[in-house]
Image (cartoon, rainbow, N blue to C red; front, side):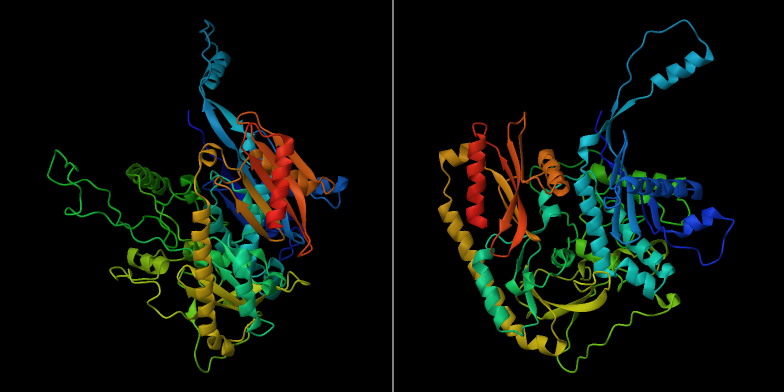
Length: 606
């Protein structure tokens, strides 16, 4: 039988210090429910008692662990079939998630028939005929789950503000609306069956040519005011200036910019009759080709994301906190539609940039938020954080109108259907656009306020400027354009030089390449043909995080016999500590060889 991937059981956010507005001395359940700010479950309908029991269990585990370690709270709980993770991103705020482990149904063992036909024996025979489930505890890693939860919180903090700031300025009702609108969509898009990548949990990927383009970026920084920091970014790599690295901006901010540069998936097109090859046969019933219809709008979609996306089917029936259950007919139709689309073999991709627009605080329906800067007379208005709850325009996801097929194309791709967008990426003159995010000073990480960031895009590259006034940004357009031209030229020359130097030989072809990740501060340098997703390295990272006295962890697998090493490093240039992760794929390599490879990486990158 096939293996069933892990799935999210429920996700909740609560604050045990909150109290209801109306005094309820005799109703303890009302007091417990007032502490729950957000709750979402895969079940179609969840009673209040079940919800309170689940949240109460999480509170009891945290309180019980504090009796033994007041400074080390309870982080995760393992059971035979589930994994429970508790994260406290802010004081008195807790994020709690329960995940069902991956499982494989096993056929029941065949038992000989007995003559006894009693009721007890009949029930035992019926239970023994049910398939037995084998759970796989090693498919999930606690460090990866916690890192994903914290990335979700940082993304919410960047687009909406911190939990504490929203609660103090707008109130509890506004906080619940913002949490429901963001984390409902975020939970639906959490694919627990996807392969893990250690580099995503460690930090931001630096561009391979970063040492060569850093002097050019710093030269650009010297020509702009001292308080302005520059960041060169693509959808897969970053190249920060020295001034930006010393400013200590959050990692979520750079990830947010990288997601906005991701290309939007275009509409699927089918070949016409004239474009079909000669060996394509027609159907026997009639003289027409049977092709899947990709122009049909998704049924039961939400914010332009249909149920035919490559996501877990069970998650689409989740009700959000306080919502009514979905009827059986709708669920049956949804399952039929999904099975039909899967059989066609075409999978649509979710536009990450449009998804972040949909769950951001400034846009309720996924419309583009970037606007060109005004050339003359543009004034920056101050942000007003204090307002009544009634004035906050944050509709719940279930109340948001479902867009039509045309509107979904406009909101996701930014173009109207039928418009030719196959022009050169450099035909339009580059210009500055801006986005608003919530940032906090380093000394007060919870005091978030809205700030403006300017982007200068040219093809797949972009330059982000932080701490700049709107009156000065247009004067640097030509200077920024020259920066991107120089960066592209340096990267192109470095790519050609590496191709010429890496001529294949018999040794390089037959010998497997080693893979490594070097982390310094918030940035990583990755090398190798394969991604580091080994269970040994995740376990080594957990040991380094929990045991500060441990300097190095190494082990060797059995099948295959690969070396796995995790070591602490120190960057003397930036006076920052980091980590190194290495996987050596050669069977004949010894521990001394692994140590020499690790020292060579230190000399090359650190």
